[in-house]
Image 1 (cartoon, rainbow, N blue to C red):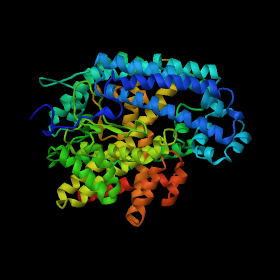
Image 2 (cartoon, one colour):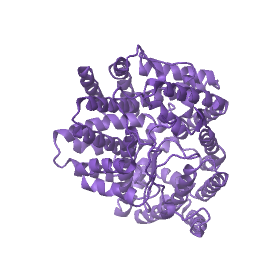
Image 3 (cartoon, one colour):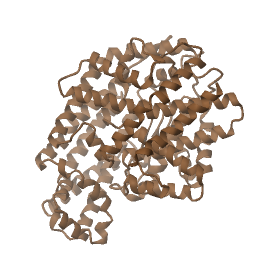
Image 4 (spheres, rainbow, N blue to C red):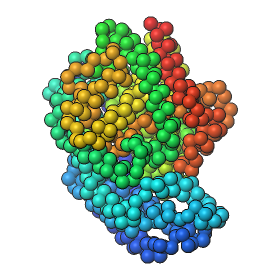
Length: 594
């Protein structure tokens, strides 16, 4: 058996970024930056100090100019970010990425006044301006912008924070990315990337899983002083800014950005934590029994079940499986999804220096999204493709809302991705007639749901503990590891044992660095999709049309408005339990299978 299991033989796609820019030295890129600089300075000269006195139509025209600039600057940074994600260790690319960040930050500094000044407009004055239909078009953006009014600082401080980002949080984030991408993990006689070594944690060979797990622990420990410093610094940086902005809790700014009330998020987290025994604790005890073990070591958590041959799924089959599932639900979804394959909007292969994991980047509405994967031919990789393609379809559908209103809050952004996974899983399950294979498939889905709901909620709890304790002073790497182990033990249950080394596993998780408290959005999305899918099963009539309309709304509607056509309400205390009951039902079914 090779060190990297299930490596696909098919040539995997590499994205074509020409729809953004042809190259890092393209004259189009320089021209866009120069034109944006002139346009930003002109907008500032024309409107600074005058927005409150404009009529509705004139304010709408100013916002349209501002939006056009955001599209250009977003295109530049999307290109730079995607090139950098393709090889974060190339010094020329790193230099280009940093240069673009600094240039765009400089240009957008002239625009900082715009949102700040809009937020200083009196409610009565803005209401009169909104009577004009042209400005009413931007009402959702104005609504979401003005929720930040209580947390807005003076113009000078806001501009300082904006300009210092590239030398502060942005630089620390870049250091995290470069440090992790540069690590190599010895397994056998090979030096593996992080994507390759984490892939081995689902190897059928227990000795190989242990070797990979111990290599991860040993290698991450060599980088732990740097990674701990990065995390401590960024948590402190957030605490300082939160204090100045008067946020009640470390999670509060994320909730505000997600357009979701604190009490709704608290209810979600409380419901998931209360369900730990009925979900993860119960499932992992079952899995230990199936594997013939008294308990699972942490490297057994993602082990395949006995009888799971975990065959390599070549790229064409993965593509056809996902598009087939999408098409069965909605031909329109499959039509949009097919463009990603036909037009080279996906970078799927594993290679040194490439960002680990997977993402869908929306870029800007005037272009189209791109997907990054690290595809290695496993069933989970097919589900990851379904997940990221769901994001991509969502981003295409919402693009007509424009730069300012196409983005969806993170909580709802995960809806399309998780729904895409569910469609793909249900199609595969319905096609399987062998009871043993169905059990393996159902167990795999439960594991994915536990990873999405339980594990991500536990990640949010880990962040809460770290951010709260960091207010008293810097945390040592040992203390961060202790918090990690405590939270993991609570969430995963007594059937899993944590051998020495697992205490460093927090240090590879990019969400903690890039977007603090992002992680609960996965649990939000999974529970929401479970409820949505239950509605779909009760009645297919008109469901797909309503679903696509929900995605096309982008950021114009809040969760209550988006879910109302389906008879769902995330503010209902029973809502989350309804979603969690789907996972409990799957585990009941597995228990009955023995």
